[in-house]
Length: 264
Length: 352
Image (cartoon, rainbow over all chains, first blue to last red; front, side, top):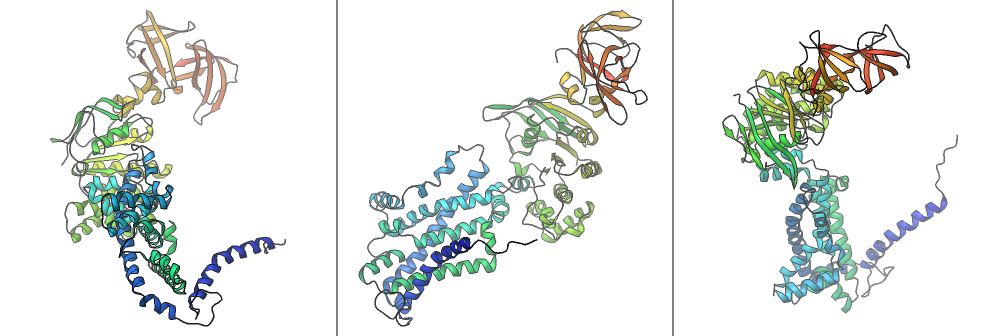
């Protein structure tokens, strides 16, 4: 009996197209970042690493890189601090809690980010007169909260809460059981939420656009400003750098925990 | 240390739904009492109240001299075994067993030693360094048992501990549970929906329905002398027939059933609670015969049980299920009589 080993040519072509559209922008950005020209172009004309050096020479890039990293870490941590207990309660008391509560925690996704950014600016930055960095932290924490709650929830939904009760029956107070029994068993979800939130925060433009202000900006916003003025390959080289950070984070996850664990 | 468990006047609600009503129960020192009933009867709720995972709306719970009613769950000192084992997936078997000792502030060397000794008692010392996912269901439940026993609790509680195991292992494990509970003379409360399991393992069984205990007795008593129609039905009395006492003859009560058939019930065996009462029997308690003194019936469908034939019988009082000897198979449609075997029948109050 003949086995059909070759897929239909149309399927092969379609798959190739998908890969092309996924990969082409990356190739173009990497290529453009190496171009020895003072404007963004592809294919690159001449090869240079000058634009990578330029990132670290322009002080605005250095400064916003630190801001973005700090903001992402603080915002994500704050969001997890709220999101983990929220996810725990939503799953632990699924029967008792009204069902609309789980929807409340995804609302920030449903509201257009521009609207979210604008309303935080109006209420927190100008309304409450918060410092710019504090408003940014609140905005980003809110932005990534749905991801934190959802991803940690997914982990908790398969967690058997009778395990927690077993710990309590053995003499462990509820609060300690949460840290020694519940958290270690949803570790995968917490790390996944952390990474997802971190990347979302670092790449955010819409919310930061409203919340950045004099003296404080994030890397993507700085990129936008730079693009309006110069349109040189630095934009491409910063993009490549951001990609490398993501790849680096993923590599660390893969090496320490295995990537499949993110899909658990 | 053996103590008794006392529940008095417990009422409990889920939201506004009442799930237990004025429930009282005493488990004596060293005794194993089972709560038996269909799902939703309140048996698990009762166990969770004693464990401290739920709060009663009225009543009190005492363990020995201690009032548990308002104590937080982690201070109650009760060994709990769950249906789904509830082992800690991220800890080794040894650390699972040692967990309760750790909560009691025991040093790591001492608790490893004690956990090992306990694992040896349940025959799992070789698996001490594995994690729970490497174990079979039966092994997991042994670990859960060891984990509950190692803290030396004055009370053991079991929540359907054998439901996830296959039939053969269930029988094996319930013997082991009984042995471990007996060895230390520990007071125990056992929740199950399986009658055979409850009867085989318990000193006494409480049959529950709709948040109440209907009857609390030794398995032998429950099996032969149920207190009402619900319990009778639950413990397998297939036939519950309304009768009316109608005089006495030759030291037997003459009782008439619907359709006019008369049963003679020997005075020394029966004490009908009122003029109208119920006559309850399993299929084994009515023998199908070609002739004799009993309930006239027309035989219907015949099934083979191995030890007897079972017949669905048409009588003037409705369908009755009865057994007949293997030596004399009768065809459907035959006219026969159903002769009560008085040592296997009982009478119940009519209003139950």
